[in-house]
Structure formats: C-alpha cells, structure tokens
Image 1 (spheres, rainbow over the protein chains, first blue to last red):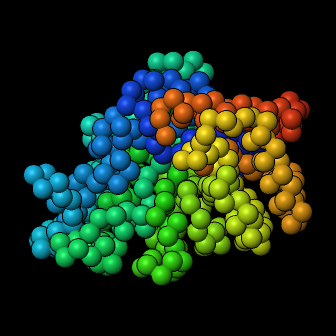
Image 2: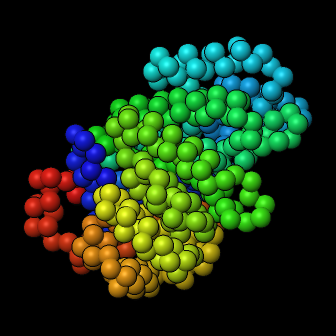
Amino acid sequence: MKRDGKKRFLPCFLATGVGSLPHADVQRACALIARTMPQTPFWPQLPEHSFLESMTIQVSPGLPFLKVEEEKGKVFFDTTLDQARELEKVYNFYLTGDTNSYPIPPAYAGGMEGMMRYLKENQHLSLRFFKGQIVGPITFGLSIQDNDGKDIIHNEVVFDAVMKGLLLRGRWIIQRMKTIAEEVILFIDEPGLSGYGSAFFSVDASTITGRLNEMIEEFQAQGVWVGVHCCGNTDWSLLLRTKADIINFDAWGFFERFSLYSDALKDFFSRDGILAWGIVPTSEFTGKETVEGLMEKLEADLGDLAKKGIPEKILNERCLLTPS
Amino acid sequence: MSAGAAEKAMNLLAGLSWRMREKYFTVEDAEGAEKETVIL
C-alpha cells in the first residue's frame, strides 16, 4: 500500500514465513530462517519448544478478565471479576498510548527473542524488513470462552476490553521488532476464518470486518505493513475489502476458489495491495515437490489472474511468497 | 510436519523465490524502482 508519508512496498517474489515452525530447537529454527529468508526474515512461534508459544496462549498473559486454572488446565475469561477494575486498567493503558504495558513475557517468546538475538549477532548489514505475527481477533475470540462456556467474542463488553489488550500487545511487538529492522511487516493470523460461511460459524461479516479493520488501522498507525493470513478457504472478498496492506492465502490448496474473487482482487490491487501466495504446501507436503514444479504452478496461476484482467506487472511486483 | 520436512519446504521456497526474481526482474528493474519503492 502507498500510505501518506510511506514508500510503496514491491516485494517482487521475496519469500517470508508464516507463524509457526515445528522445531523444538530455537537456534536451529532461527538459523534456517536467516539462511532461507535473508531479506525478509520472520520470528517464529515454536509451540514444540514451549506450548506457551502457541498463537492464542502467546498473547494471553495479563489480558483483562483472563483466568488461568493451571491445576485444571483451564483458561477462560471470568466475567464475574470486578468489571470496572478490569476495564479501567486496560482502557487507561490504551488511551495513554502505552506500548510497554502488555509485553510478551520471555517464556512465551522463545522464537521471537531467539530470532532477534540471532539476527543481531549474525546480520552484518542493516535489516530492511522483519516479519512477525499476532493472532487475529476473530480466531482469538472464538478460541477462548467465558465462565458460561460462551465464546468470548460474543460478550461485547468483555471482548472489547480483550481487543484493547490485543492491540496493546501488538504495539509492544511492533516496538520490539523496530529495534532491529527499518520496516516491520505484521501479519494478523486468522486461521479461524476458514470456517466462515459454514452453518456453525457464529460471527457475522460486519463483526469480522469491523474487528479486523480496528486491528489493522491500529498497527498501520504504528507505521508497519499489515497483512491478514488465512490458511484455509474463506470468503476472500471479505478479507480483500478490509484495509489490509497484504493478503496471505493458501495458493497451494485453494487457488481455484481464490481466483473466483478476481473483481475484489482488482479493487485490492487498485489500493496498492500485496498478495502473499502460500505456494509451498505445509500439511500436504510430501517431500517430492520441486522448485520447477512449484514454479510451473505459480506461473500458471499468475497467468490465470492475468487472463482475468490483472496486469502481469502488478501481479509480479506485488507478489510475496510464503508457505501455505 | 516434522522439523526436517519444514526445512525442506523452506529451502524450496527460497529456491522458488530466487528463480522467480531472476527470471522476472533485472538489476535495472531494481535500481529504477529503488527511487520510489523498497524493492530489494
């Protein structure tokens, strides 16, 4: 996107990663990222290193109303807590623009701190880009319940406070990442949106768009490029019409369905949007894939979108590559 | 996905990125674009 006072970002087939890696060894994961994505490295979540790095748990410490009952292995939002106190605390931090009130504690950030340390020690040139991620509001709001078992996204008062906590956490992540790179790319991870459209999905389109845009605008105001990642199929017109700078889709598994949204995609590109192609399979990875095979598929898919009226130059310049 | 498989997948991604950039973008593209963009 070209925003006021900001350069355009034309990744031209640069590669970066998505949230997690299956490694338990922090150093091995960081070396892999630095070697394979030297221009746009990312910090990984490493749930095999510590379950505290799972995407919903990682951002949870200190959120308003949150209650952890370790002996029962239960995490929930306790709506019986003193509401005024819980709300006042988070809104005060939010309104005063506090960036340090919601850090990610070191035990929850092995991959993040490990990657930053690795880059500081091994990166000899200044780092232009650094990519990170945070769980999105919809996925988070559908993952943790209140004490009555209701998804917290459906409790408007409590969820709005939780949302402010997530925004504060994002501010802290951005400030931390900016200490080592000129430009920060932050993806909002929304795997939960792959259920959108099914009869069991309980969040409506306006809530999805509203909450996503709230988070996107908050992070854009911190001067970063904001992406939305969904690793399954969803209603892509919904995401393409948010204010995101980057949309990351599973090109390996769902290109045909994604390509049905070519009109929304044209609008997205007219706003200088960047498409991040999840072109290398992850859960469907067989080990038999080759660079040539992936290139053939990518070129065929790019050609398909070009036939639908999107200029080839735009498709190529605004293309980031990621795992699916 | 195992760590070993993830490493193979990321190596493929790096190789794909390099091949696509080499095929579709020249040094001149990058130098020209550098004036107003953050192309690498």
